[in-house]
Image 1 (cartoon, one colour):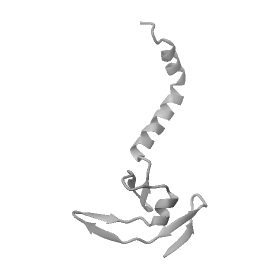
Image 2: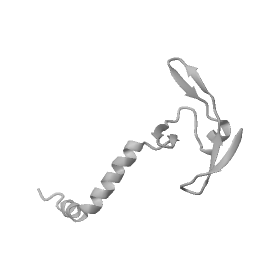
Image 3: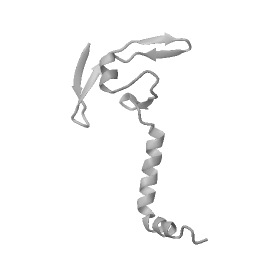
Image 4: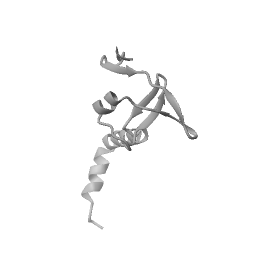
Length: 94
């Protein structure tokens, strides 16, 4: 069964599909429906991340740790913009 819901936060439609978990050796696996794989341009062997959130599980191609590190960098680069510009201007002065 495939149906759509409206994401409360983004007001966009979200596709919902029920899948069954299966035992695979010592792990449990889930098979993504072909229509979702095609729509999201996923391929066998692609690396994705599963993130546990308050709302449930999020499957994403983005590394959440990298995203957090990038956000910290962006905040720091804004806060210390002048000092970084000064240091960049000193390249090759040694």
